[in-house]
Length: 281
Image (tube, rainbow, N blue to C red; front, side, top):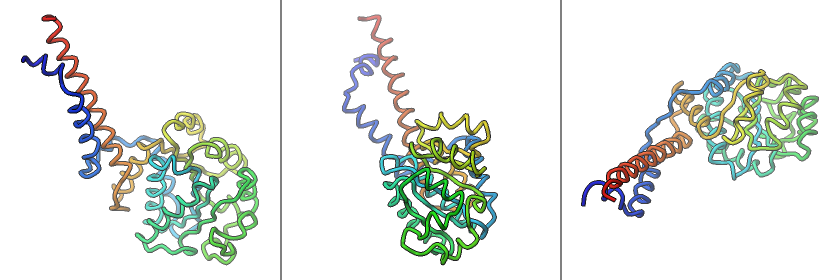
């Protein structure tokens, strides 16, 4: 049997097995193929980098649910590692009730890595209904909007929140957003436009294209788009020496990249087999 016939008769089970190996191996043997970091990812990293240690807190809003975890959860952990490594305090909240547990899980995982303590280094405001009413209320008074944190502790008794009254006391806010309510539908029109809050966002890849006009207008000062954006932020955090933790988004991008290369290779081999056998047929 000649080479063209062999290529044209590869058993599909061999193809599926090959693809499975290509997809799985990078999770155990990371390649760390990040590529060039996009400017919007670098801008968000630089904005967090500019926050002074032990000063007013970085605000992070959990505006996503478990369905969006593969793309957005790695962003959250990478941003927390960046902030905690520089002793930047973090104030976290959730506009999606389904995201409350995700924010708590990320804090419980990342905070102990840097010895950070609740109330001193970070606070979790939790969730309140009302979306627009919540963020507009925060523009007037955060303690009045959230009298207690997620665990029932009065906000006025939390050391790191003393002197934090409203958005004027928040140097930077990040909405990690999977839809509505999120960065485009709530944070930009109600918070950035009205209160002048400096704002960045992390979004699912399918939504990131809609955010670029706001990035170009200056209403957003940083953007992480999908899993690639998460991988780029992980790379920046690791490159700066802020973290040696595993990089799930980078591993997933390795797997995706290898799968794409494998598909291209199979298409090329299939076409070679077709060309070699076309004349004889």
